[in-house]
Image (cartoon, rainbow, N blue to C red; front, side, top):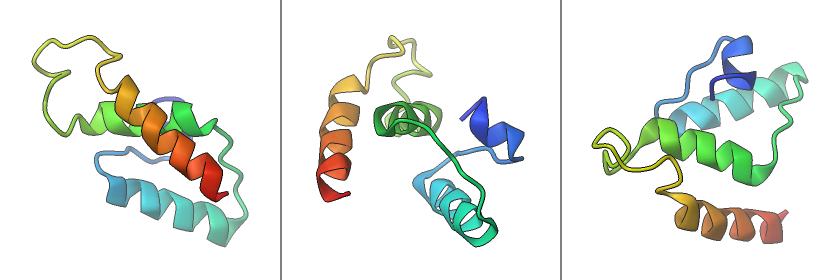
Length: 77
């Protein structure tokens, strides 16, 4: 979440951090506008749940998971 979230003073280290950002945005009326896939990519890459990126994997390592989750989110909204 380098650009949009750090401008709001947030860093995302886990999915719970994203929930806090969403709650803040809703409570203050702040718009956080990112495409679902872009947002998920930033969250998952910063989180790096399997430490693959930290171990030297390419930045698109989680793309398949991001696409699956993004599709589900978009269908639900």
